[in-house]
Amino acid sequence: MKLLYQTHSPYARKVLVFAHEVGLASHIEVIHQETSPTLKNEHVFAQNPLGKVPVLLRPGLQPLFDSDVICAYLDTVHSERRRIPTEGEDRWRALRLQAAAQGLADAGIALRWETVRRPEALRYAPLRDGFVSKLTTTYDWLEVHLDIDSPVHVGHIAIATALSWIEFRKLPSFRDGRSRLCSWFDTFVARPSMKATPLVGEAQDFRV
Image (cartoon, one colour):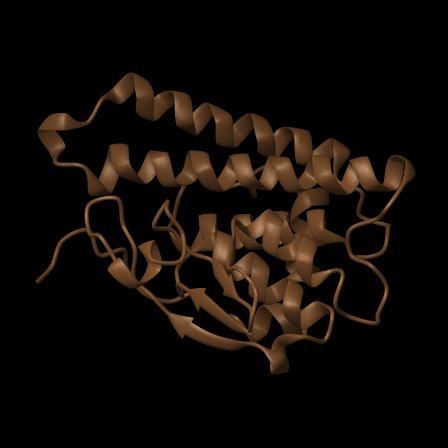
């Protein structure tokens, strides 16, 4: 399998961490691809009509895109414990955390457009503040609701990669007054899967 990847994407990193956690990383060739809404990558668009990574290319099969979909697929092709529980409240807890992580990453990326990436004259402060609020209220929710004692599942992976990206991009911190969340996060980022997939690089919105 081949994974179209970006070294500074929280979504792509989630897939690669997942692959490491289930023992599939050595079976996947990682191919870095720069993507941006303002810089079209024809190779990625040929595999994903949205032009985004991650994309998983499977021999003889159609490509898969979106990190949730790719993780769900990978969870069917390994022989270890499933990282996406298949039934009961364990399943819904894991998927709810994954959804929270997706929202964190989405809000963080949108916040960067309103503070860094969009030309200054086009930035809109109330929208910026709204994205900051989404981050901070989700941090507070995680401090209470993160299931820190259950076996590692896709929700944990998604939250850890989203929070790691937030720190990487120096967005509003989740650390102030959230000792439970921080303790869990600092333990998780020491896992081999996280150390093997460091974030690096800057978004490229225009050709240079």
